[in-house]
Length: 71
Image 1 (cartoon, rainbow, N blue to C red):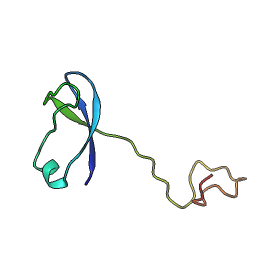
Image 2 (image 1 turned 180 degrees about the vertical axis):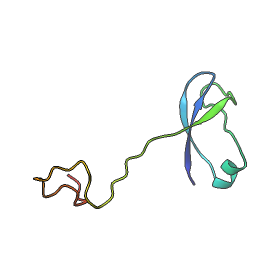
Image 3 (image 1 turned 90 degrees about the horizontal axis):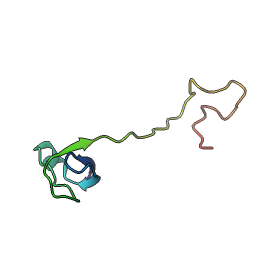
């Protein structure tokens, strides 16, 4: 089940909710965990994605750069 991030517009707290995709697509909104308000908005979280291949920010002298290996 996916986790969605929300921010309360009344108290400002940010919280996570596990909700089915069907409930989310139907527009179900959770209540704030702190104050119980229903005035919440979906918050988006940036994720870091690493893919194999050469990066445009690699230095040409680094043989590991763009190899997809973690350092």
